[in-house]
Image 1 (tube, one colour):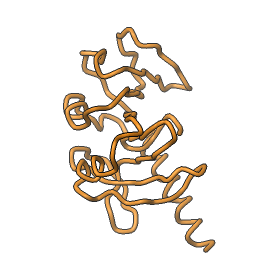
Image 2 (cartoon, helix red, strand yellow):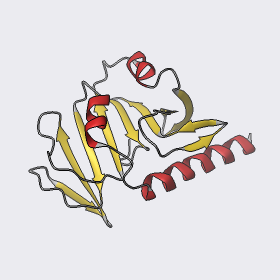
Image 3 (cartoon, helix red, strand yellow):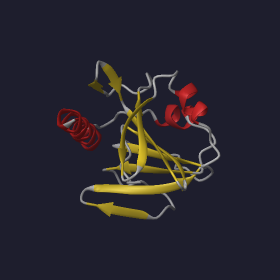
Image 4 (cartoon, helix red, strand yellow):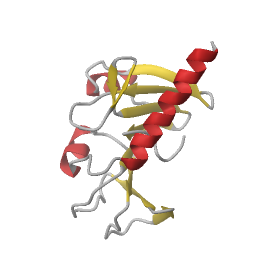
Length: 154
């Protein structure tokens, strides 16, 4: 049991490391065409994005939150992106998005957390012989999907 907890903790550490240091992972158009029906999205970037969204800075990272109608049009590099979906969104939507590669990985703060791989994103880690580049969590407020992981908390 201790070995399983250790490996889960190491997996989460590796995901956080990849998430914090991965750069230029995303093609902006591909991201927003990939996910549909989201309520809002948070972009995490080292860059200053010229936009009307409120900017929250944490260290050298900037967090910008947009609804699906007011996304910035400029090109920018992102360290991560987090989509928020309504609670009515079905797990089947995410299974289809990830072509059934979505797997429950652990429970954090009482929240079921899944991981998956999407071929449109070129950065990944290998966990249990599977490529992983996304995290998904279902909270009481809805679903949170993060590439390469959820960088905004649950």
